[in-house]
Each structure stands twice: as structure tokens, then as C-alpha cells.
Length: 203
Image: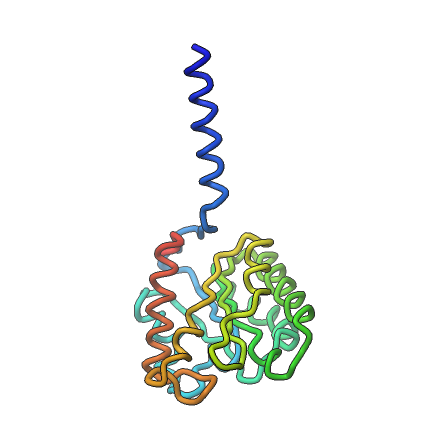
């Protein structure tokens, strides 16, 4: 009997460890749910047309309403200022948060960017929406997403896609200039995000 109890204890301990290591998941979206893509020029689709920006392509891939709330030049600070109105207007079930690139270009302190990202996430969650955090590569040769994206995601239990734009912007065939994708690049982003959302349970 004691052997069985010990075996059960080991099983539950391993189960709990596995659960702790599992990536954060998302609730399944209904057909009427709205997704807001909130960000800067990478979300707006600079370097391509409006109908080839990643939110438009993601909408066609998923059959869901995906609002393009990308503003070129936006920083985490200016994003904080306009976020409440966007949430009030569209009442999304899910927000794809992709900001930080302009903070880096303007050499803002990383600590300020990280704190603003946390405030953005808190504001989105307070509205009742879920958040997916999308990392932006540092503006340097072979720059990946800075570590603060992973810290925010881990501390706040967020699904994180930190490589998607880094991968696209390393491929000259997928970008319109050094820091923006082209139509093919944005389609690649949308396809990767659709798969990411499926794996996270949202689709």
C-alpha cells in the first residue's frame, strides 16, 4: 500500500512539474470575437498595402475580425495613452501586443519600455481581454528580441512569440527596408501567428 501511495505522490509531483513548464494557453475564440492587433508600423503594415498587412491576412486565415490598431512611430508610452480608447471602441477578446521597436530606435531606457509593456498588459487584462506578446528585434545586425519581452511574458503568464519578426527581417526577400516587412513578409508573420494561436488553444 505504501508503495502505491509513494508512486501516486511521484506521479502527481511530475504532473505538477509538467504543468508548470507548459506554455500559457488561451481560451478558444468564438466566431464573433474580435482580435485587436495593437502596435506600431510593423502592425500598421508599413512597406506593404493595407490588405497585405499582417492583421488583414490573419483575418482571412482565421475567419475572425482582426482590427489593425497599428500606428507608425508609436512607442510604448504613446501606446499607453491611446490604448483605452481602442479597447473601448472595439471591445476585443484578444489583443496581439507588438510594441517596443520605436523605443529602441529612440534609445529609450529598457527599464522604461519594460515597465510600459507591463502597464499595457495590465490595461488590456483589466478590460477583460487576453494578451499575446510579440517581440520586436533590436535594431542591429542579427538582433533578436531583447530579454525584457521574455521577462514580461514569464512574470505575467503571457503567451510570447518573440522570434517571428526577427526571422522575417533577417530575410531580404521578406522585407521592404531594414526594419519593415514587405507583403510576403507580413503574410509569413500572419501564418506563423495563426499557427501560434492554434497551438495556444485560441483557434
